[in-house]
Length: 434
Ligand code: PLP
Image 1: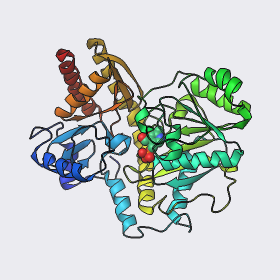
Image 2: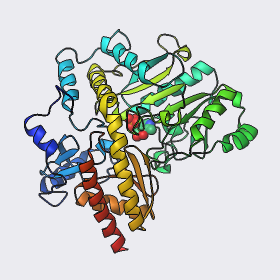
Image 3: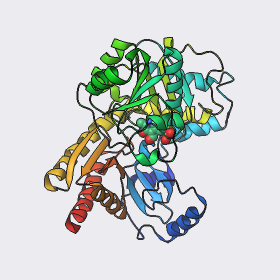
């Protein structure tokens, strides 16, 4: 851990405590009581994966309200990139909270807003200079990109991919195509969106452009460099480069949605860097501020032709979130992307070993600490997720038949090996049950 960012007291104890360590069955009595109250008043649309009731976290350890300690391979859905309550991030938030909680960066010149945009412009692999628009979430970053792409090109159509997840507001859900549940009952969605299979550009060239839409009317192709909710799917080697070439050929903007794959998760700051592809617009969210609500739409400066008032947000780029993001970027640049590469290697190798021993595992795929394990079917994946939870290991389903491992990027090799051992036990239990 970096100098000046040491965990102290109870927080340090939790970060280094053995996990999993369960003191009750899960959920325990306090958790059950809180879940009952929660279910009476919260929106039934919330897709609760399993009955986890977190109380506090430190590093890769999460403790629930009954004092059970979990090894967290979820990071709050790929968000707490620097680990739970990283002292450098907490300190940055604390310092900022003592100075200014809010002033809209939309209507005024909030210094930390500008500082973060400058920082982001310096680290995104876009062609030429960049500018950024800050949001409160990933879905708002997607909305901003859709609006900018239409505005800057004067074109109306957009291409997205089957299996994609880009969020749940109306524009982004119109791009999302991972589960029909996300769309059912909400139509009509945004018109002018075409979906094609992920990992292959031939459908765009041979079907869309020949029969359905003229390429000169397409504003943008929106793509996750590694699909997230759709199953942690790494595309074939040439896919993103082919997309880049196709977009160049027709003046279409390439939008890389790195909300889940960005901020060091795949072992590089941005997943597109694995293939040397430079998008026109890059979207960040989730891990960007270690758990504070923040998203960013970073675009080539020459595309930002929109006029004052064309887009804005009261809260987007809130000072606390910006402070957390600046501290997060420091940590990811300095050590965590490299750690994701290294420990991701340990996990991938271990998982491939498990796959060789357990026919229930169909495929192991991933980059860095963005790892998907696909099982025989959906049922098997759901039971492995549940069996892990009962053992104090937090993993989360994705795609049709997979679970994802997206731990905080601070995880070390030792914790990774513990996770592998617990996962293998869970898989063995599910396999034995048939
Ligand atoms: N884009 C991608 C790739 C995502 O994975 C997500 C969320 O999972 C989003 C966008 C939406 O982000 P948010 O839930 O912060 O709105």
